[in-house]
Amino acid sequence: MAKTKNAITPTREENYPEWYQSILKAADLAEHSPVRGCMVIKPWGYALWENIQKRLDAKFKETGHQNAYFPLFIPLSFLEKEAEHVEGFAKECAVVTHHRLEKGKDGKLVPAGELEEPLIVRPTSEMIIGHSFAKWVESYRDLPLLINQWCNVVRWEMRTRMFLRTAEFLWQEGHTAHATREEAELETKTMLRVYSDFARQYLAIPVISGEKTESERFPGAVHTYCIEAMMQDRKALQAGTSHFLGQNFARSCGIEFQSVSGEREYAWTTSWGVTTRLIGALIMVHSDDDGLVLPPKIAPSHVVLIPIIHNADTKEAVMGYVNQLAQELRSCIYDGEGLKVVVDGRDLRGGEKSWSWIKKGVPLRIEIGLREIEAAQLGLMRRDRPHKEVISCPRDQLKERILRTLEEMQNQLLEKATSFRDVHTRKIDRKEEFIEFFQGKDEEISGGFALCHWNGDPSFEKEVKETLNVTIRCIPDHLPLEAGKCIFSGEKSSRRVLFAKSY
Image (cartoon, rainbow, N blue to C red; front, side, top):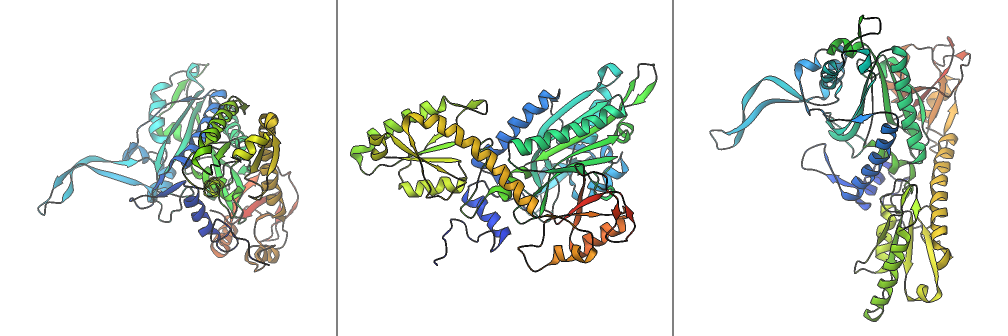
């Protein structure tokens, strides 16, 4: 049997990391920049981020949050106020030490004008936002204070991969202050649920939510919660985090308020965020060996109309029909907005145009020539089906069929990803089986999510990370308490935790 030809080489099975890089190029999502570890996000990739931003921003505002913006630069002394925080980020900080350039003796530009205090390019904004909160909060009447900002951050990563881990990336970071511990803890879990619901509803990515272990907590946090997703290579990707900060940052930043009883108290704070890493998750959860596959609710375009023009004599008739059809389709409402329709009028062969949109992941393609116009019969091609499969549809039923098909695609992508995750998730109760699961040579059955009992000893957590490159992703909140024995020590354990290799 002849080997199937694919648009992407190597395939997922042949070399998953290279396949990922090939998807980025073929779908025209991003490219490397002249600055080491940074990327240029191209229009199609940025359109995905804009859709993520728009949907999440609406959810934040529904839950009472407001957007603001805070400085890119953070005085070094601010970061030093919270000991765990500065220790956790010290090795990732980019530091500004001078405020101008001058020509040196050899004529080359050199830094000059040393700053009295170095400035940190924000790796995260708890301390600089906490400084403002301390000025904004005076009384319990000023609380809760619910703020979000969309911005870029810099973490000086040594090993980078576009969208997954870069020195500079885009994100949102929510920061809130509350009068009571209970309110702050509720906020932390509410925003985690917002992330979880968004991942399922829009990205069609099933996630497992839960609490991080002490060694994996955000520096300075009391509790860190996360959502974890499984990629097609069965590794985990942390797709979002939410932190209950207690009063640690309030003490460091002086966020105090006068309570109802007239006492001075420190506020209880939270922070939470997701990044452009979500685009990496989209790629690795849904895409195939022909390119990107996008859930319709997050796709920059829902439908591409591809005119098929064999000669100049038919061009005017075909293009007039296609443009009229595009106008009609854009009046359809999908997920609360007008259907996003692209007309590909480029002077290229139909097959070449079609493949370019396959690789970009547009959910539906419709090729239209004189034959389709005369028959009043159009063919829909779904991105999640073989590229030669065509769904025939009468012209007068097209609108309803498109909307129904988009909804089917959205649901089926989620179902497929959920099934894949569940098939590769296993309860393991013996150390030998655990090692075989993550080191086994049979790639068909090894690797994925392992749910195991653990007695809470961080030394076992460290050992597994160092020897198998496996970490505890979270303590899943959907699993009930369950008596068992730690697979490492044999000691009693009250619940299972989620182990996996990760990005």
